Image 1: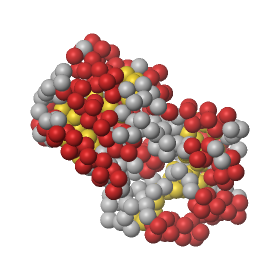
Image 2: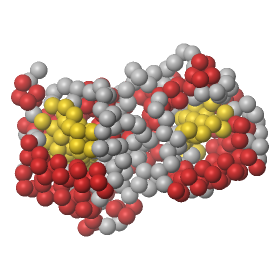
Image 3: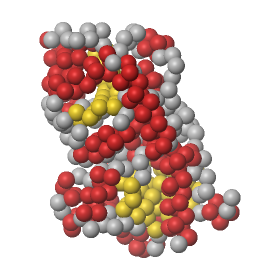
Image 4: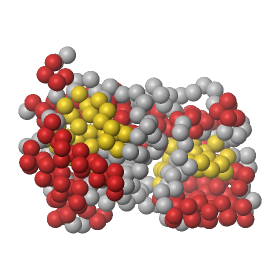
Length: 377
């Protein structure tokens, strides 16, 4: 191994790398830190939950997992003191105006190369070129989808590469016996449909209820697992509305509710199909990590054909449904419950796509190549 590359120091600027692992960007940074061997990676963590495994050097600058104003202040204080110590800076978040001003200043002051991973391209950014020029300060912009890469190219940005989100295909792998996990979560030996998204993605709360109703009418034993983060009061209100409507229609026993789950891989193992009925994806991670993790476990996926989600269609790992078509979404779920041949076809394609396009070892090599180019060009 090249000793010069071993001595180089790369700082990952992220949210707090602290459990729970419920945010895609910090999960990606952690996966890369476990696999990259050619450089010294520095992770920003803190609090009393820093016992996770990684090859990286941990810098304890945060006090908890919430990326609030106080934690952002601690990040900026650390950067002003230590930015110059690193050879390359790689940020993993959707930039805001004030943060970008600071990072641009530090970049120019210390003449450091910057790589910037962009989880999505919000409409407000796309329509404001002056703002976009401020926010996209990286020497290289990495997107997680062709959708965002092509959008940036159309806006005149050439320093853009697409690298798919990495997944640990050894951890997220096909399981031969899911009955034990289904019993653990009191699901039973019935078809299990996992929704691991956010309630705010739905557009209308009744959309999800309509999907459940359309499935249960034809396959009454089917269970749904809603593993949804409640980020704010609106999400809490949406969940309450969903529960009230499910009660009203006699469907509440067909749904299990989780919020942040410490063992998301167990929920993925226990499910049979992973769904993502999102009707809006603005400001949301382009390619949801839990869909990719489900594919890696050979679980077919069903999703609305909206924005970057459309890219999943090319992997033939499941069924894409027109946005807003709740009847079509229910039909797709029932198809896969009732047709084992079609289910197995999508399951096999899902696992193959995960190994070929999303495997963390494959993705790591792409990042190592980029780091080598910007460190030694």
